[in-house]
Length: 140
Image (cartoon, rainbow, N blue to C red; front, side):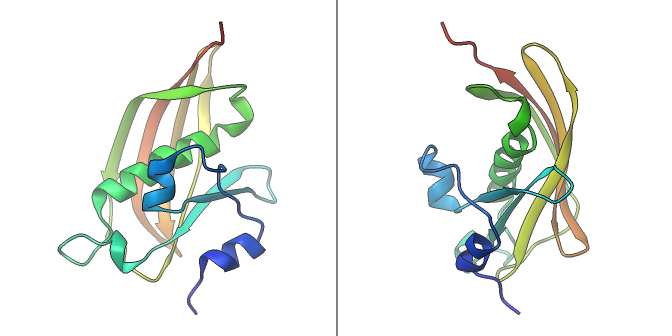
């Protein structure tokens, strides 16, 4: 069964709301609060997301992981933040026509930094693992 963007919206997923034109162009990427209180991210992979080898493009996956870090840290953000560190490991390939999801956790939160780790997966298959550091931007 193929999942569509409309299916995700019906299931309660939403976008950030036109705040990142790049993510909207390559996605759209969605998020929602899950039953366990954590946040999950998702997008429906399409042929335009593939590299020359017919698998999900690595740059797309890293961009989705960056989006997912902000989703995972959503309850810790009280304003703007930027990514100051990012690591990823490609574990397997992804393909078009699939629901691609991400989940994770904040492993440490300081006054200005959030340390996040997570994974991107399709069904039971992990595609990419990631970790990163977000820096909160203080308003002046």
